[in-house]
Length: 376
Image 1: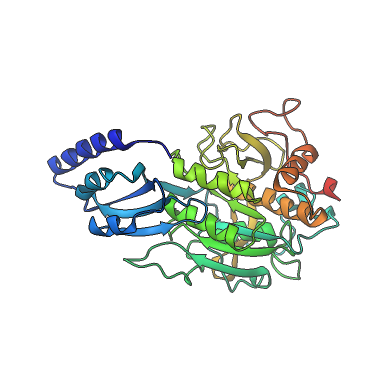
Image 2: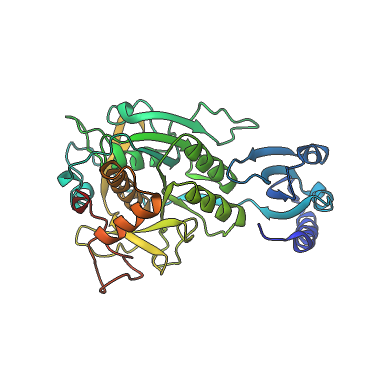
C-alpha cells in the first residue's frame, strides 16, 4: 500500500475544514489501514471506529469505518504505515427491455461453447457481483454456496446473498445456466457457482467489500473469479488483493468498463486480471466498450439473453455480459486440462482466441474473441 500518511493528514484536514465550512461534515469515513505487523484493532476501537473487514489476502490491512475527526489520531500511531480511502465499484451493464425466451443465446453460440466436448464439470466459478438468485430453476442445481458482504443498516447478514438487483444472476446464467429444457444454456453448464454479494440493490458497492468477496472466493476453492464490475479508482489495497489472489492460483476475469472508449477500469486494468471488452453479433467492438492496451480478450456483450432475478430472463448489454463468456470458457479449459496453472489457462485462452481487427493483439479486442471449440 502507498505510504500516504503525511499527504492523508493534510488532505483530511483540508477535507474536514471544507466539509465543516459547508455545514455537511460526514460523521464517518471508510478507509484501508496498513500496519507494520498485525493490525491494531484496539486502536481502531479506541478511535470510535469499527473494523469492516480483515483479509486473508492482505494480512496487514484492514478496512475500517472511523469518525473523520479521529482519523488523524490513528495516523499518528507508529504502527500505521499506510492509509487509503475506500472507493466505489459499479456493475458494468447497460439495461435493455426483457426478452424471455428458451434458446441458445447468440453469445454462447458465437464463442462455440456448444461445440465443446466439455461442460465445466468440477470447476468452481465465483461470481463477485450483486448475488445470484438462489432459487432460479436454470441455476439452482449448479449453485454450491454464497456469502453476502453488503451492509444493511449497521449490520451484515452473510446469508443474504440472494440477488436483489438481477445483474449477478444474469452473469451467472451466461457462465453456467443448466443445459435442460427451459430458459437458456450457459457456456459451462456443469460448472459450480459461488456467489459473493458485494454490490447492493442499485449495483454499487465499496472496494473493501469487493476484496472481501475475492477473499471468500479464494478460500472456498474457486478456480475462476468473475468480476463484471469496475471502478475508476486505483486503490493500492485492491491492487494488492487481486495480485495475491492471482498468486494463489486463481484466474481473475473482469469487465473493461462501459465508458464508450474510455480507459479500462479497475480491476480489469491490473496485470493480474484478464480484461474483457465487448463485441456485437457482427464481431464489431461494442460502441460502449472501454478499450486500451490492458484489453486481453473480447467476448459478446450486446443484447445478451440470460437468467435474471425472480426466476426470470432478461436481455442486457455491457462488458459485464462479455466477462462471463470468458469466465465460462476458462472453466471449460480447466475441465479439459485440470493440471494447468492459472497462467497456463490464461495463455491457452490467448492462443486459441479468434483474432479480430488488426493482426495480433490490439487495444480493441486484445488477443481476439474467446473461443471454446479449440480447447477440445
